[in-house]
Structure formats: structure tokens, C-alpha cells
Amino acid sequence: MGSLGEAGARSEVVAALAQALLGDAERSVRGSAAKALGSLGEAGARPEVLAALVRALLGDAERSVRGSAAKALGSLGEAG
Image (cartoon, rainbow, N blue to C red; front, top):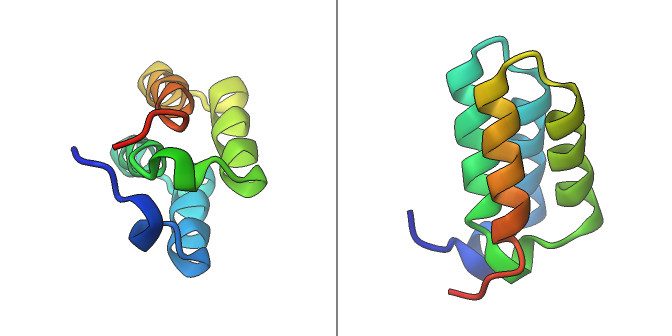
């Protein structure tokens, strides 16, 4: 998946992805939300994104979601 960058980092997009990551019942939705947040690249390295990903990393019941959150955190500092 390519970087969403600045276009994807709009507040309403970020809020919807964070809400899906932290609140959706389906692990596939939570995992996809984590991946999408990670694809924001440097534009996504904002407090609300970091907080949601760390919360998922430390608290999600599903190992796959925790793994997606960890990968996303690692991707936030990568440009393009």
C-alpha cells in the first residue's frame, strides 16, 4: 500500500480510522485501520495517531491487530 501522505492525513479521515482501530468489533477492520494509519507516513506522525496505535498495540485482544499497529508505528517516520 502506498503512502496516503498529506491528503489522507485530514482530521476527519484520521478520526474515522482511529475510531475503527479502537472500536470496531471485527479484527480485520481494526487491522486494516492500523495499516491505513501507518500509510500516512510522516504526515500521520501526530499525537492522536500515535496514541491510537499505541493503545491498539498494548491493548487489542488480537495478535494480528497488535502486529499491524506495531508495523504502522514503524511506518510513520518513513517518507513516501
